[in-house]
Figure 1 (cartoon, rainbow, N blue to C red):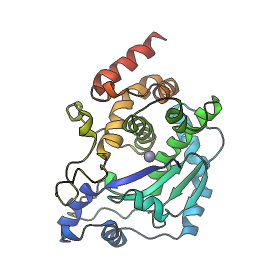
Figure 2: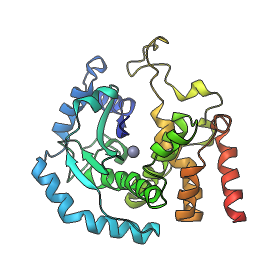
Figure 3: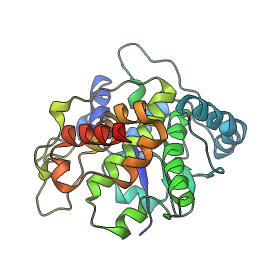
Figure 4: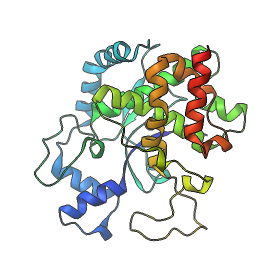
Length: 281
Ligand SMILES: [Zn+2]
């Protein structure tokens, strides 16, 4: 299966903004979000996106190497455009970009913002709700870095290697993968941790949504919708103290020791265990 790391704006967050500008919640969809973004953000062509990447990629990578104390192997391929197949796979999300670890390619959505407009009074567009190329690129580079590290260690693409070598819960793979990528994105763009330990799941069902973005209870017969906040904000909260203290050794340990099913419902304990293990080394 093709590996995709979607990077997202949770519809829930957008619903607050839509409400504040008087757009009916019932019209909420990927397209209404895009229409709103068109009003708020400058549109860029594919050429401008490629041009931005050609001009800035090396500098962005060098800045990460310095700040995160890591070394990159090679450079990713960067493409513009998200396939319909990918959009359809995540119907409740607006996808800003993703990384394909089989192709070593980063994909951006066609109308991603290069130069964000200043926030407008009353709209409260927080950095988390915007979809700007610099931050998405910093995040996707985190996926690329992990994948290259795995390949360099002769473990093949990551996270495919985890899926092939053992029974690892998908939520564990995403929490670690998105957590590390968020660490790259947030550290490089000065965003903080807004997740609390009390939000951690205490049972495996907590990893899935019970209500859709319109507040309607989700039919249990439908394919479950992951609680993306746990993967992204939760993942970052989980890995932050570990990567802060152990840098690349922390990243490496997390990649190959993701939480077990039992640890997924005791993530604070898992985090403390990882820290103890790494301090012993
Ligand atoms: Zn991601």
